[in-house]
Image (cartoon, rainbow, N blue to C red; front, side):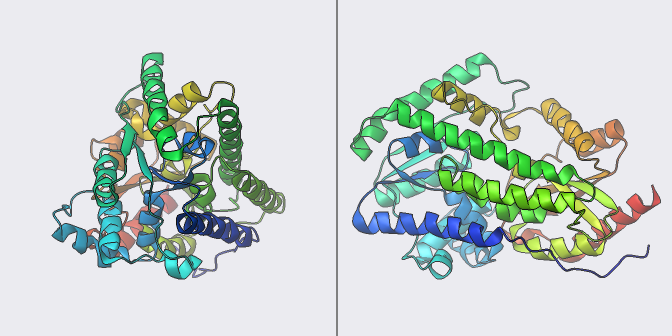
Length: 413
């Protein structure tokens, strides 16, 4: 099939700024813990971060730490530690790697950012919109640190998010305020909340815009780039720093599109990644797809931080709608319609489903969706078995063989 051997990735000038934004995020948290001010809230990655920022908290996201442990491959040292405490190898490996790292009193954040460790929380705030595991995860730390654990129970598996769903989540979100006021010692300022929601909306719009530059042919970047540059959209949404960062990145991507700069030399195939990243294999997979002249141009995972429902004029209602209207909360029919729109928008000619062993909530290959989409869209689908963090669940030899065969199939079409 005449596959090339190139594996040179094109680095971004914006990466320097990205590192500064991420370093500032962790160093501010570290200083806050040392001074005792401002208070620190831990929040699930698609939790009500805007409310916490508006009430003066600095916000830390344990799922981001889970991804750091996976990408650094340190997760494999920590998962067995949590398993020994009774946390099953079959539950979320973000949870088990994060809890294991805590029990060992270790984190890569110390070496990467020069901080003293994971910042101690004053309150933990979850949203079960992604899974129930986050609730159990946060209650573990609530018992450890003896701080309040509060949260939102969201609807799951719905075809359409209704006004009744949104009102229920908004009511639960407003119900968090008294505890947060007690912990922070300040009253909620609605003007401040509107300002933060406005910043999150701008961040989200820019994140959507940078992802959509991959609809260009050739694409200026890949899914593997997206997973790196999504950091500020996760940990710094609701801040001016995140907005400034994505304006810089967007400009660089637009310049690449204008000049026809391809992320994958001689791009021949355009793919969609469905499911979680395999964090410990990002570089290996990026090089594999580059060698196969195949560019993964879009993904469910990175699109999950696009929140077009944020409205600063109606903060609670719009936050509830934004955080309930995410891909993972919907039923399979809605998800298939969504993927079809992305396939058409990005001119995709194949779909890769990652069946993550410990993340059933974000694995959509288990109820015949690949077979239905293959028939409906007329493009091939491949299921890769692995995991977000637990590499014991991933066979590299089998995955590479299957991906190479899949690309050969695309070559023949």
